[in-house]
Amino acid sequence: MEQHNKVDKEKFLYPRSRYHGRVKPENLLFNANLQEFAHKISYIAALETSGKISPEEAYTQTRTLWKQLKHSSKEMGIGSTKDSPQTNS
Image (cartoon, rainbow, N blue to C red; front, side):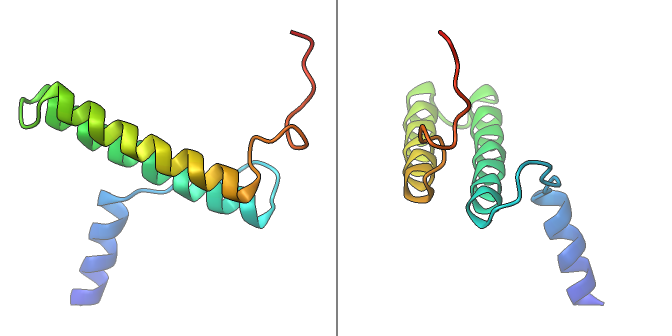
């Protein structure tokens, strides 16, 4: 029973959406990282909005998370020119 409550709590606190893109291991992993990034950013924004952390601290935390996400995308080759559609801009 306690394990079931923990799973429900985890699903509530850390919701995950289904992935509908091109199914490749690196895309699925990046999508999970992106969802975690978005979830953490929403917490940071709520803390800053409520005055629990300063704008500077929110910026620092956001920048750190962004660098981690960017690093993970580079490690997996996400966003490289070979995966990106060609645009005429």
